[in-house]
Length: 77
Image (cartoon, rainbow, N blue to C red; front, side, top):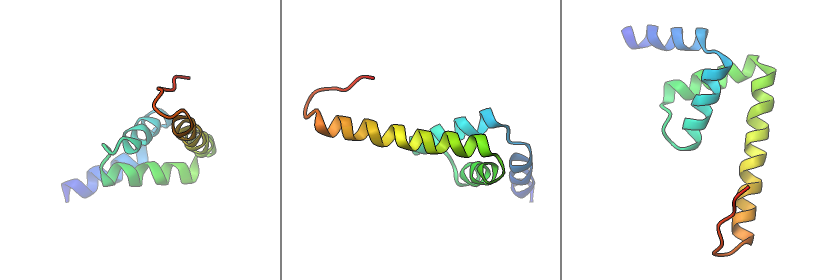
């Protein structure tokens, strides 16, 4: 019961800054299921965070392509 209440509280009080940190942790595989759900629900109602998530995904894809095209060289932006 306590865990459920904690989850509901997290979802209802999640701020944009916290959602961004969760998104970064999720990208690294460090975010828990509850945090991912809270971030998903936050982005469902927050247009700026949805936009930021799309931009992050595009940036990650571009960086990945650059690393693949560079061969053994490190790519720094």
